[in-house]
Length: 222
Image 1: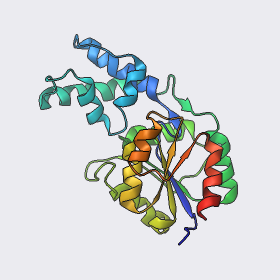
Image 2: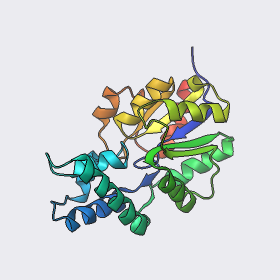
Image 3: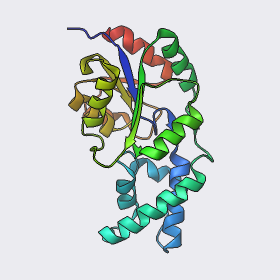
Image 4: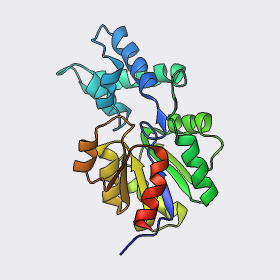
């Protein structure tokens, strides 16, 4: 049975906002302060997407990610990121036009991120203030992070929309797995942090090259 698109849930980092350089610079400062190897910023494409703690674990040298060191570096990363989260971050080209089109359609929108909740809300308020989102959820204690479906299903309840009628848009395998687990339509974006092959292997049913192409996906699945 064809689904009728009634709402859209977006990932944040790598989907709506290009945050990679600010995240990478903050993590590199943490590593540098401890005399640990730093990374080219593009390498952080492979580190982000699964929450700040996982980012820290991936960035620490192999064999050195003790729970104690991870905890210390995680606190340091959050402090460093709090100082420079908005230096180079920006919406991807075409995102404002897409959100305008969805707003014009009256399409309910929400955001679900593995970014810490306070930073998620801060980024949305700073970079996407002219659009209304029915829910903005980041990583919080007590709610499993993606790819667990809990956050996506919580948003579906808040929007009063059946999961089968929601399109979930993201840029990583984690996002596609979240959509599949929640019974939503997984749509992968090609401008984000991870390759198409990763998203297809994780269940993406559509891949889009530009933000406005999402509107054609709605026509296909409605």
